Image (cartoon, rainbow, N blue to C red; front, side):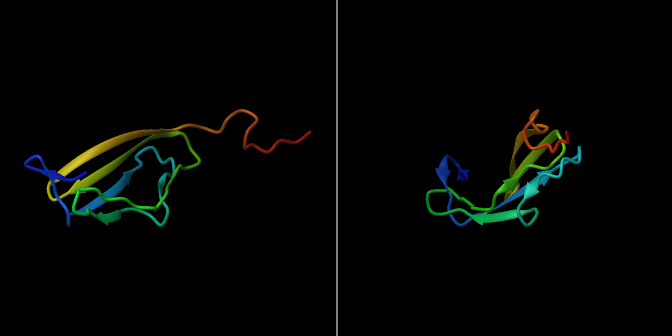
Length: 89
């Protein structure tokens, strides 16, 4: 939600960027940034999926709007034992 002086703000462009310094391969479908415009109640949504990469590691999603920002830290886990890995007998 975009807020200025305690009130929701519509019509603001919000940009979402993936910072992947550990090379996990995580990014939004189609790449970063993803941009949305907030509506009158200050919210903005997207249906662009964030796709976890194939390698484990830490990732940050940076959200920026007109000089303000927020960071969301994520951890990409490795494949589960016996899950998606192919094996031979």
